[in-house]
Length: 256
Image (cartoon, rainbow, N blue to C red; front, side, top):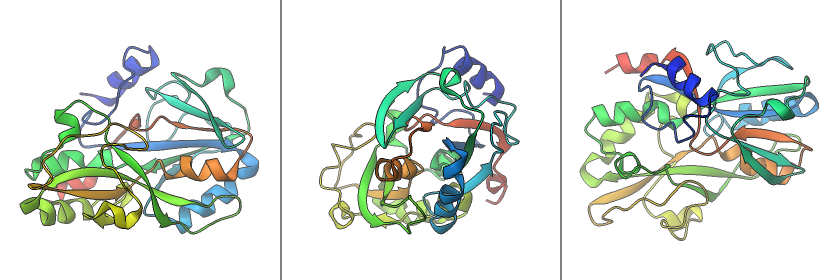
């Protein structure tokens, strides 16, 4: 699958589903768009919290075409979320009608980028097999505040066969720009997760808890969580699990 073909289908609103498993090997990113007056605080927030917010690109105010993709960030993601005054307002298929010339867009690394490497390493991805959006959870892991942005980390969960957990760690560790190694393994209650079948974002995944261990990676939905407390007048993000597919191949696929 070629990124520009996938993005063209998204622009036509023919493909509105999760991007997990699409264009394997290409870098996928989360997206956060804010008015310029909040951009410095958010940039500092990302720099202080590189695990959940690894920056891939910061665009100029009003810029709609990133350097990492021949794409229009207003139309070429499958789904977007709009927050107003810190509250979720609506989920839409494009943001052209609400675009402002002072918007600054941040593209943040996504764990979908290293999923092909996990598969190549013999690690099954149950959310892909079950055709679901990867489950994501709010946690009690605190973040470093910056200006108006603060809060706790959001994580994505993939259940990994017990004998392959070390393999998953070694593979994902190479992908620092896509969250890198996990932030927690097993014992979800230790990071404030009480029910793996009730994710805060995405969809629950079925797995045998005796044979697989829940592994948690930092997640780019974290800024959406921070926005609920920061309460900027408007903030636009990707819908969880619905990323920008860039034109850049991740070089880590050549490392082993």
